[in-house]
Length: 399
Image (tube, rainbow, N blue to C red; front, side, top):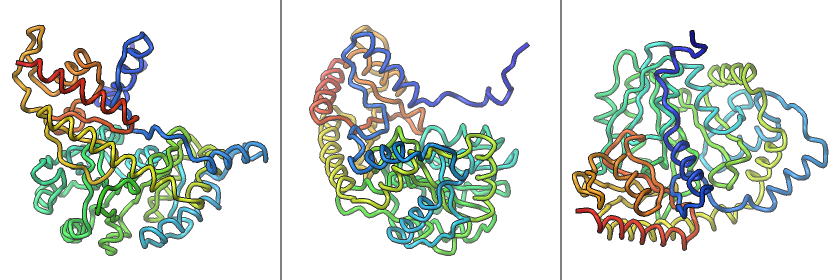
């Protein structure tokens, strides 16, 4: 007898979460591990946001709120979309949840029927396919090679669409590649989608405010307004405002879908934390100076780690945004470790870096495109430089 549902056999634990946990365990055991696994800023939440959370506690804002979020925060979300993205939403088209991840999970549960297909460009964030499986759907992974900037092309999109296709997932700036779609690229994808009226879009824009150089973020709902009525735009405060632990995300899209997402939320977690919502309101409505300053820091760090990786023979495209590099480790597949073991996969290579360099990274297998490794550069400059030096030394030991 087992109490475990059969559906759980289709799902794997989050690879990034497991890698981060293993690194933390090794550090706790006294090992000098540099973890480049975690997808969160290492900055403190800005003072004015923390102050808003503290004030909420002092003022007794510690009770349940509306399931879909406090009115003031929903209004701030609407203003943010209009101000920054040129998108207009009514109150019944917005939901606030305990993280962008919950919005996406609820969206799949609310929209995907058994057997429905969801197109997921690879490399992808590790959770998309398993979320789809839990909803009873079938993830359709479309390989997007480095030669295409790790981006979905109109041709590949058209080839992936079948009569069973329900959704397309877009993530820009992307995790793990940092790829950012241009307005023209989104419009080209939009032309394909306009020919398939039954296909909806989930646009994960959580890294919107982290872009580098002349790269500018664009939402597909703004690039092709004719798709706005079937696009769920997902965002949150975790990455831009260093608020990962506050757990506030939000989504905006078709009112009928939002209604069902809220219904699911009412039967699972209910409202997001009232205190965190007050802090998120301050984040969206308050000064944005630290957001821009942190972005500059990320860009500097990206250059530090990318230079080290390229010297080590781990070529990586320059990301347009987010805080990851996706490094090609094909040059070391088939090489021997000092202990004589052969590196046969990117998983083997990631394990070797942990064993030899004491640097924790995540194998590209988890993101649907191999042989690569993902490294987060959301760590202090000195530790990042040390990680690069260790990786270079470890790579030179492979024969």
